[in-house]
Figure 1 (cartoon, helix red, strand yellow):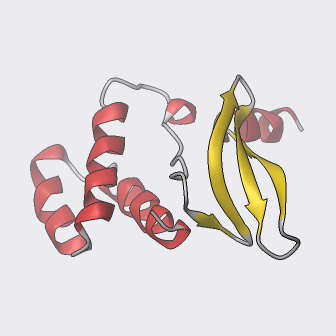
Figure 2 (cartoon, one colour; figure 1 turned 90 degrees about the vertical axis):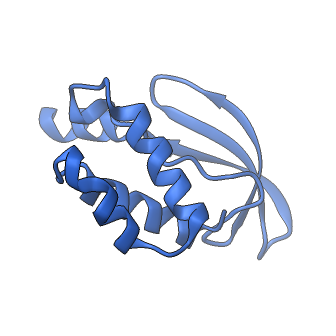
Length: 114
């Protein structure tokens, strides 16, 4: 999945969480014609049903092979309390790098404590 599709899925997911459940399907049907994007939105919605705090909402995870900026995601290295780390290829410099995606909960807690 491309980074543009991930961004689209995340935006649709965020909008769908503000819509009452009985109206969501109609919204989702009109939000995107791309079945891959809608599938990921549905997964995010399903994962967040039992979550009560906004900081715990799952972040979109880049798919292996997706492009994020100038990087191509190669593999998942690990996850922890701060975020998730991936092996990626810098397409401009043609070398392997590590990409860390910091979780929104960590960002929110830093903003609150500042």
